[in-house]
Image (cartoon, rainbow over the protein chains, first blue to last red):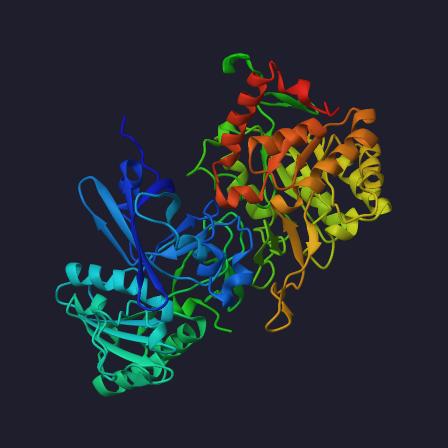
Length: 313
Length: 313
């Protein structure tokens, strides 16, 4: 009898590396073997995992930045969702890379993980980006911590869709919030910042920051709009993939409508489970037939949605 | 040494039915029927309590619907569900795949709603019983307003009892009352076959930067390990004051994560236990708890878990 493998599950992963990157980012590399390997080898960009860090201890008091000291004291019970920055499959294992920032009691614990530790993952969860292979141009728009799944997506597209032109726009509040940016590696000539993660795939990256500390000053979606006006790509042959804060996604959806270019957005919601049990991560959607609104679940129906099915508020 | 696992009987009686072990899913934390399939063998559960079903579909509350608290979480989902018609068409047939008895949790805004839903569901042989949700703190009409008023508890329990034929009737109690035993007694007098307790505590989390409640609904129901000692106390109180004298079984729950937690509830007087919030972080935890219960029985030389019910010294 053929053994039926589930699409998702609870697996243990070993930590290979948990490295501080730049000012506030950490990159954790996790290895899955056996069943976990089989299930995760088919994971796609935009999907996510729920990581259990509730059993980890906090760092020593003096290692907790004062602005986080109140939040860090909270005892956590729920897992935390993270999208993939990359997935590398080999014969014996699957290696999952996740980029995160330390901003609360869970990630404060997560940064104490070291090589050789074991953690529990649930995944891969949700629906990722769907790659439209017949398009000529793919435009990736990343805001802040929205960059990791788009790095993953760009790597995959580069290998799968050789003839497709990939253009990347990355925005952040300031240079210190630019995901993957590492002063030690990436060159900083103010207007010509390079992000190694995209550059390694030979993808042209346009960078903007709200305060002008790196790249162009302004919003990433304005940069996108200007590029579209100047380059006039054929709307039918172009697709936009966006991930970032809700306001940035709303603006991307508006650009998509204005230029009649279809756009997939990866949304974020508070979620307790990630598996469709708790019903907390509701996303208001439009019923195109009768114009009424209804809710989909970010974890199960998303996190990637077509921008025109979401009701932007 | 103790007793061998194969000689330990975890089965318990719930009204006219028998559960193979005391483990049940708590309503609203496990979906409709098959959502846990990727993680556990549902046949290993003692019983399955579905999420709340109402006469008409409900969209649920705006987001945020959840927030994590110290060792707990608040939810204000707002009884989002597909409505009884769709539930009968799409979900009830799935129940036939499993041997586990299914109990459908029902809710409504007025008493007639409860009666209508109960009447429709009572026709299906796949359904073993109904659980009356008169304790949801997150809806404007119905829910907790029924469960805090003895006269309404009487009316709703009696009316539903008339239409459910041979189905087991469970009444789920709220802890948000001055004396939970008063409500418990009314439900038992009106024909409840079992009582489940407790639903969540009405609670609030404030964002101190914006000075607004975090939840869109402003308040939510507190669940998780934070409420466990209160739940154990209330189960013991209702057991001594109502359930034991009347010979009615209790389904205890509130913050159970481990076999030790579950055993506390059984010693306090629960015949069965529900796993709720813990399933969000570990969807397989109910099945693991059943195994852990066997270890406890072996160690304490109990050949049947029933010897433990209400054994508090």
